[in-house]
Amino acid sequence: MTSHLKYRFLDRFFPTPRFLEMPAVGLSISDSAISALELIKSSSGFALGRFGRRPLPQGSITGGYVNNRDAVVEELRKLKVALRLDFVNASLPEEKAYLFKTQIPHVAEKEIRGALEFKIEENVPLPAGEAIFDYVVITETGHETNNHLDIGMTVLPKKVVDTYAELLSLADITPLSFELEAQAIARALVPEGDSGTYLVVNLGEQKTGLFIVSEGVVRFTSTVGIGGAHITEAIAKHLSVSAEEAEKVKSEHTAFKHKKHEELFLSLINALSALKDEIGKLSVYWSTHKEQGEAPPRKIGKILLCGRDSGLSGLSEYFSSVLQIKVEVGNVWQNAFSLRDYIPPIALDESLDYATAVGLALSRVR
Image 1 (cartoon, rainbow, N blue to C red):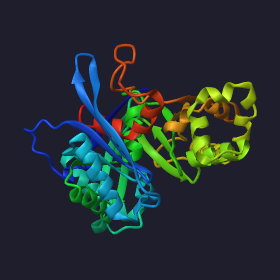
Image 2: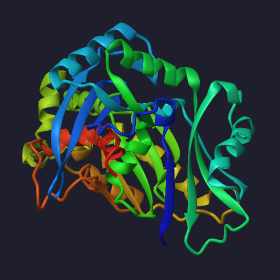
Image 3: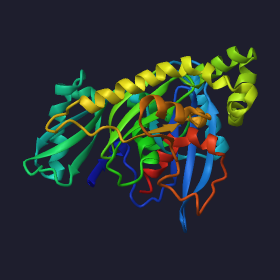
């Protein structure tokens, strides 16, 4: 089954002069770090341009809330100087977003936005005047939609968008667009034009994002308070070493294959088991959930992992075994270039931390 997706990005609130050819730079702002990455057009598709990452002081942002504006702005300014950033496509936290599917009568393209405004208060605990929304029209081949349009909606409190816009303004960086972190990651990891259903697991430092992507659209997001820091803690406890030493062991994935560390991965099971349970619950929910105007959705075909620690030796095999579903580490360059033709100047593990930035950069060049 193929699908046709028509996107309306949040750059309508920050309109860009059409005669300007802006660089494709994605800027990801997460709870733990700020990452930026540029894609440059090349003869074989795209090539990696500028890229860099600045860790944020712990607690600067939690769950999408900006607790220490000055600290975030300071790191943004440092990244701006280091990479000579001016214009970016920036991320917004999915924790603050409401995602849902709805239907409207078959109307002209210019009338869609007006028709959708009435759907906000029906589905979201926000007055329409305090919300900013994005949408995608979903038309599935072989699915009769002559009398209505299927719409995937993303709604955010206006104050959230204003807060992140202010951060960039104070750092003298101009946002060309804003987009949910989850949708950007999906654009990077899911093959372009693929209408399958995926569960994306974005393993961060303190938390893990779980996203259902179907027909190229993020349909559901969830966040679990388990991340790479918990894996590091388990390693440190098992080996009786410092957190710094445990981090080194974790980064050397081959260490998990050494005989002396044959029990090391097993020591992580407690930390990973809770995450496995949440992935399992979401998988069951999606396979049994029915959205408006459709039969029960297809089961998840594959789980894609991203985030630096997703490359941990044995992790994908563990999830695949206990969940009985194919699990693989995602390729963040999936829709940018072929690794057979071009090898980017960045380590594989490190690239897994740039999935959001890659997807944001691709929003300007696809």
